[in-house]
Image (cartoon, rainbow, N blue to C red; front, side, top):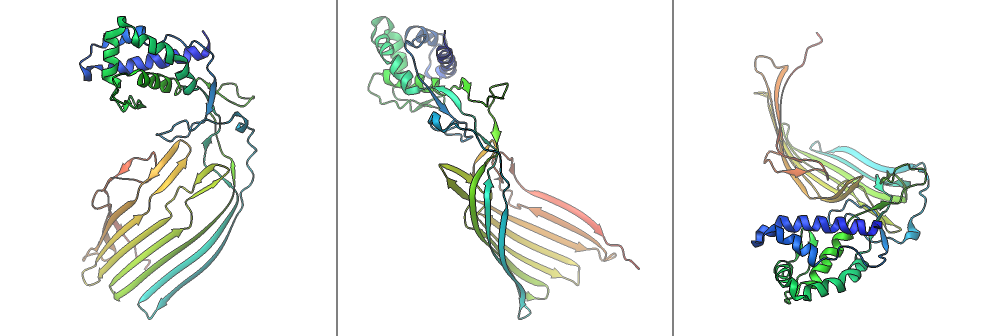
Length: 359
């Protein structure tokens, strides 16, 4: 048996296990699935089915990407040095003794920008379109066989109106015949199983390799601003803003993420009561969502908004001793800061600090 039929057989076995797992939802005896596999689905491919190449992408909806032209599988050049040149202009000052201003604008040029770790070794798959063409006639004949009438009724009941089965698109059209849907289900499942990896000639095992590579030249513009207005000597309000012109770069069909938000905004209010030694601070932080792609961690980081609270109190009997309470994410919003990271809620930190006099 050739490797194509081995892969096809694995797909059929996995599909059978999946159908048995969901058969109870339709009130079907799981053992009937064995009869469907034996009598309706071909045991092996009848012809020569071509293979296709796909590369692992870490994108859940399309984990192995689109079909690649074999001619695009080429040697990857060694990583070159990636110099960075930044031109920055800034201002920091106090206006009318009340408004503290910090402003920076910059331009950064990165030559031979280095990508994050990415899989660059394609995997080999069965061509699902060719698999469908190979099994179409035999499945249609088996579905039309009166001896398989019960199996046809069950397959039609399960697939003819189904949108997906086990995460595989079925596209049931409710026309009373599930032959098309069954062919699509099997061929798609068979086309999802990698059975080979195109690895370097000096690699002992056919393993997928994650490597860095030079992407090209990148130019980024940005600005950062901070404003603090002192309403009174003990009460101030402020705002911060950080902006980056691009969070993704594309060239030669490849996209590289900056892995950081292109826009961050903060608002704050601080109140100090020197007479009783109390400090209060409230901060709101917001950042725009961004696409992330770092090694096997790829996806979307959604908008993040957090409210923080800080309280400090100097003990009246020991002015050099202060108790401080820092509470980040006061509202306990579950936020994921990066793809693959756990969701974080409220974080509270209580500290006691004492400053010793040098006298």
